[in-house]
Amino acid sequence: MDVYGLIGNPVGHSLSPPMHEAGYEELDIDARYVTFEPPQGEGATAVEAAETLDVAGLNVTIPFKQEVMAAVDPDDLARRIGAVNTIDFSTSPPTGYNTDAVGVTRALEHHDVPLAGRALVVGAGGAGRAAAFGLADEGMTVDIANRTVETAHELADEVDGATGHGLDAVPDLLADADVLVNATSVGMKEDRSPVPADALHGDLAVLDAVYDPIETRLLRDAGAAGATTVAGSWMLLYQGIEAFERWTGEVAPVEPMNAALQERL
Image 1 (spheres, rainbow, N blue to C red):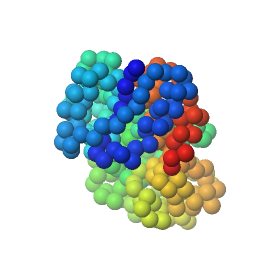
Image 2: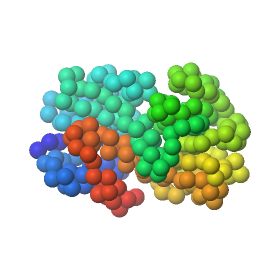
Image 3: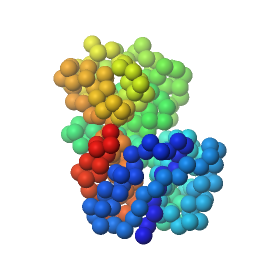
Image 4: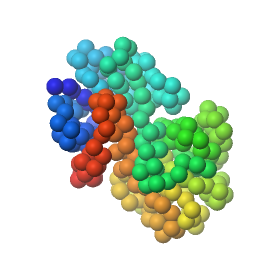
């Protein structure tokens, strides 16, 4: 039996175990997915311990995505993003990937959104970095808007062709945008949107990385404006599917994995 898992702190709320195990069951793969909660500051040590225990693969979540890079060989995308959320132990040293970027692009593709034209990413933290690099690598021109404008400029300097802005530029940027990604936590704990409703339009595709609640204020506003809406649960699903496929070499069963995820949201 292969053992896969997730390290994070806290990790008890994770939706990854039922999602991955639904995939194993559907494909009759002899595997289990478990969670590990090492103390903060011990992420790299936990990776080394997992390798010793013959764990086949790990997902990584907050607060360990940066510190585990010291224990793996990150691929080019993970190195550019500066964070690892998936580890493959079939190589020596283990290979680190960042599947959050692919989670963004595959979620949009699932909703038939062309990855062309201009994308506006609101937020320059971990999710924002993944979205910016992922969309730029697909050929989109990326604008990044962030509360701290210096951080937006710093990220834009790292992403080919990107530009950085403060949040006050969002309405003007949306006028020419084809894709909007909310990579902030706004909308998670209160009924708020990170962008003005009257700046949204019907030619947009809007992905909100917030997945709880499934329908955020931003998505309601976007739907009312006639935009294509993509819930954050699709990003969560596809980052997990990318990890599943890297580990198993199989095409992930999207529908059973999504059903297991939606059942618990």
